[in-house]
Length: 222
Length: 330
Image 1 (cartoon, chains in turn orange, blue):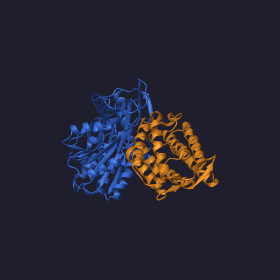
Image 2 (image 1 turned 180 degrees about the vertical axis):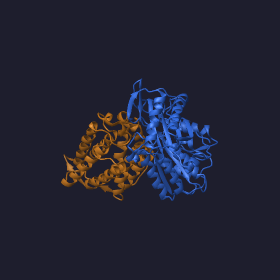
Image 3 (image 1 turned 90 degrees about the vertical axis):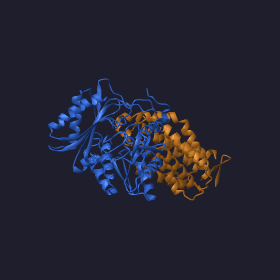
Image 4 (image 1 turned 60 degrees about the vertical axis):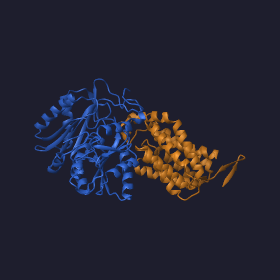
């Protein structure tokens, strides 16, 4: 299903190949942002978030490159499991859940549209909140993910295009990510640093923002 | 940063390899991040699996052996291991009577070990978990389940491992492990920070004439920065905080650990120990066993912690039981 926009077609759905391309591109984006992410983590953590995520998403990209599945759910679950299995720390299970939970909702689907995507990410968001116990305002990845999910749901309701919806979601994630700069960390080991965490962006929120932005860009390219 | 390492991203695995070569009569490396007793799995015995981030040696892998843990799994420095290596440890330790996970109470460890525990259960390995939360500085007593795990890991592993040797059931081993945990408290002080190999930066900043009470094992914010106190004054502050939180009474009996964080000399630790003994004697608290040395380190952080465990006959028995591991022999 495509819509003609300015003489060029933009997909209204994403298939397994689209998700594969997105995840491989995301792995390379993370690898490029490695030092920046490590530096962000140094402010409130032990400074290895970029290295760990580069390793984990790199492993996921490698695994995906060998998969020929046309099931969106299988692709996302494979990516999430790969991240979970190679990262360690709190970020492994949390970012693993981001893809595994979305994947479990998309199981058996050859393509997903805006409404599906909104539901998938809502499920991931709920699971991550449950696992980590974090809420909006706690300076975690939830501060980027939750506004992006709300934005997608709103877009699905108002019937905008997938392309437009993803760009709006990316903007919401970016605003959420920026807002973490003023927050005091309340979860994980960073919470013991208290007010010292003010002035630094949460690297998990930054990664969620990077992921949704990359997804929005990949729609255009496809 | 000045460290004897090769590539910062290889420190954990290279260290485990060197460790295994040093203690090959006691342990074997069963996966890059996992060591197990040479004789594991032991049929008919509860498998004790311990672990967490590396960088705290001898914590965890040093206590694999007779009378303590069956397997230890380490993540990268200060980072929880992922579920696959945890499952390798389960496989190495599972003697058919179930597996007990013992680790410090940290969010990352909890998530990864819980995921591995679910998978282990799905493939038919019965398992239970005891998270250690002995750090009095990290939350008030009414929220004890939010406290971090420090050197009491040693007591919990010693007691659980001791009982597991008697071929007791998983439920029994869990019960004594929880009892050991619930009767242990730790309070720590740091004099200088650690450096994580990957970041190369100190975990916190502190003045030349300052010390930091209540600091976490990864440089987490403490309770109070004070001017540098003497060993006696430091021992007093540590003992009072622990004894108070444990509500120690006249006639109680304890085991204790004066733990060095990495850069503090045994000479200093013995001076602290001397005063802790004096204070406990004045409180009419009897001391059964005293451990002084590096149990849970934080790289090259300077400082120490005091752990006390209130004893009953059962805890005393398993603390006094025979053990033969790389870092603890009795």
